[in-house]
Every structure is written in structure tokens, then in C-alpha cells.
Image 1 (spheres, each protein chain N blue to C red):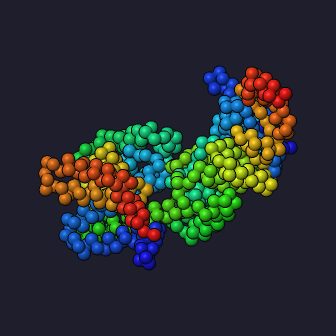
Image 2: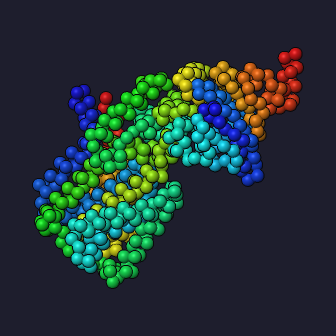
Image 3: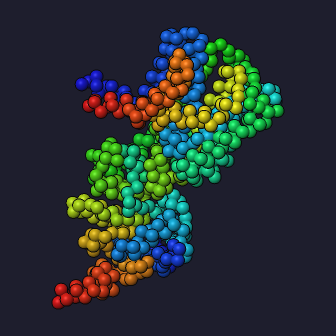
Length: 320
Length: 262
């Protein structure tokens, strides 16, 4: 009984996801030290960081975005263009990209967040399409469809290179992102976002400025996306408009839904699902996409709340 | 000067005058009921007063301050809270979290503090929790504080909505059919709760179909029919007004009632 009660408490504790995530980050290099594995793991952390933005926006506040990759693209190209065309420091460009994405989200969000449900989804989709289009067509600045090379990132004089170093840098970024997302969830802002998710009328009826809270969530989501995009560009050393594509937006939405909408750890699991699984399925060659699609369907049918919340609820139901 | 004054309120939907020339005023500590047959415009009047609809004419003042056409979240900040006829509960939150959201106006942390999880956020959460528990006790729901709101019975949700509205510390509270769908015991509990709220100095505006409840706890009653005021006054006076009886029972029905009463 005592052990069960402890397990229940651990599952409900606020920072459990963070501790489990940190433990995983330490374990991966021990179990899979090859640079290929580390690179895949670093990609998981980066996509999870981008998807955490959607966890705040969709999971907490219930506002759908089908253009999230647009902000990933803005962050990625800030890190690519700033050093190459303007001679700026890459790390500074990472920060500038985040600020730029936040400012653009503020400007775009004010009109479109008045829309609800499908209408908001289509408006955000339009935004993502525009970003991808600009990155495609402004070839003189962005390199066009072929993309452009990205100069090395250096953190306070330390040039980040090699799979293991990138693994630790992305791990640190994701841990910080996860901590901030967990902080919001357990705060007055988080309660306000969850409230307007359930009923905007009632949330406004308690004095919450629904428009301002939605906008804050949209800007926060954009900053998550842009930082992840900047890291992606700097780690790969090359960026193409694919980063901002519609299919990438859908992938990010799929991550938060498969992992569990509103769950921080679920977001990481969802990112791992969609980054690692295709790598494992390459042996299937032409059937890869079909099997991946099938697996997504099976998971959604049997774990409709997403992987992490469904398993968590299953365990908690069987505990005192 | 009354606490809440509504003057010559009116709105039309596509040529239909849903509310037309309604005026009333409510004092602090008073229970003011609005009754009328279905479709009389009671909820529309509520939505006009609480900023959900923008009135095409008329004026709302609270403690002398003009409130006409203010957005709902701004009205709450100036002291006007409400509940909804069709429940508007945060179903995925616990009962306590619902009431904690209701207390958000007294919360003092910034977005940045919330994001960084500063110690002030933890202290604020504790203060809000204590407040929410006190409010849940007041409406008799403290034992269900940690239950998901989605699983609570209807009568409990009605009281939960009142507790959440009280979280804003309103001067005036508008209750849209708080006893609808409640059994006799639940109605009795809501009856006591409303009396208790008014006794604490809050002005209560009540829409209710349960005439027993209305006649028992109201200080004044306004009767609406077809969007227009039909009668206003003390409960027992309004009850015996022949026009009111006619509006409720129809002309034929009221003649029947007269005959039955001899």
C-alpha cells in the first residue's frame, strides 16, 4: 500500500516529468554513444522544444495552430541570415530570432486570435504558408529552395561542434523549455489559459482578459518554435525552407497530440515517436510511410488521450 | 443613488424587440428578481447588463459609474459578476481550481514571474487556494474540492458557479436560474445561499422560474413579458396583479383561475 501511495504521489508531483527527462538525457549517451544515435536524440530534443510551444498554445489554452513551423523557420533563418549577410554573432541571432518571432506573433495574433476552432486553424495555416513562400522566393537572401549554409554557433567563446556537444546543448535547451512550461501550468496564468480552453465566456466572466491571455500563449509558442528553429539550423549547419513547411507544422501538431495534449513529458514522447520511429522503420523501405501512418492510427485508437496521459490515468486508476 | 441602475434598456434582433424600455434599480443587500414567461427577454436583459450584448439603447450604472457596453471582463473588475443559465463550468478542472480561477482578480503575479516560477507564485497559489476553500465551504462544496468538476452533480455545479462568481468579490451578483433543474433539497440550499450573499451586502439580481423561491427570498420583483416591463413591486403585490397572472396563464387560463378561486 505504502509503495502504491508513493507512486501515486510521484505521478502527480509537479516536477516528476522534468526529473524523468533529465535522467533520460543522462542515460541516452551511456546506452547509445554512437554519433548517429546522439544526433537523432538531439533532433528529438529540438523538435520537442518546438512542440512545447504548441503544448502551451493548444494543450493549455486550446488554440489550434497549423502554422507553427512558420516560427521555426523564422528562428532558423535568423541564425542563418544574420551571421552570413550581416556579420552578426550566431548566438545573438538566436536571441534576435526569438524576439522577432515573438513580435511577429504579436502582430499576427492580435487579429487572428479573435477566430475560433477551424477558422483559427486555417488562419494560422495561411501564416505558415506565407513564411514558407517568402523563404522559397527571396532567394538572394535565403538561398531559395536549396537553402543556405549556417555558420557555427559559439557559446561565450566555445564553438559547439560534434554530436555529443550538440546533444548536451539541445538537452539543456529542452530542460529549460520544459521547466518554463511546467511553471506556467502551475501558475495563475496557467489556470487562466486552461479556463479559457474550457469556456471563454466563463473565463471572461471571472475577469480574465481572454484576448490578452491567448495572445500571450501565441507569443510564447512562437518563441519556443523560433529557439528550436535556431538550434536546428545551427546544429545541421544547413537550413532549407522545408523547416517552415506545412507538413512540418502538421508533424509538430501530431507530436503534441500523439504524446498527449497539454502534457510536457508527453510532448517529448510524441517528438521521439515521430523522429525515432521513421529511423527505425527505414528497413521497411517503401512501406515505411504506410507503417508509420498505421502506427499513428493504432496509438490514437488505443490511447486517445495521447500516450503519456493515457498511461498515467491507467496507472492512477489502479492506485489508492 | 442605487447600487445598480438600469435605464431604458433595449435591443432588437432583426426587427424583433427582444428587450424594450426596461428600467430597474437594485440596492446593496437586496434580492431583486426578474420573472416572466419563457421568451420574455430575461436572459437577453442579463446579457445586456453584463456586456455580452451591446444595447441599442439604455444605460447601466454601477455605484454611479457608467458601465454601458463594457466588455464582460471589465465589468467584473468593476464589481459585477454573474452565473449562466446553461452552465459554464471549467469541466476539466477540479472544483477548487474553478473557484481559484474565479479569484484571479486578486492575484498579483506577473506573466514573467509565472513563467520563471518565482517563489511569489507559490505564495500566491497558497493564498488563492485558501480563498477558494473558504468559498467552497460557504456554498457547501468543500468535501468535493478536489473532484473533477466534470463529474459533479447538477445542483453542485450550480453552487460551484456561484462560488466562482463570488471569487471576484462582486458588489452585484446576477444569477441566471440558479435553481433550474435542482431538486427540492438543492433548491433549499441555493435559497439559503442567496439570502446569505445578500445579507453580506451584495446586491443580487435573480432570474428564476421557481415561483416559491422567488416569492420567498425577493425584496422586489420585476415581471417581463414580450421584452417589456409588465409590473414591478413587492412579491405579494406582483403575485396578485391580474396582468401578471394573465401573462403567465393566458387570458383563458386566468379566467379559469378566477373561477377556481371563486
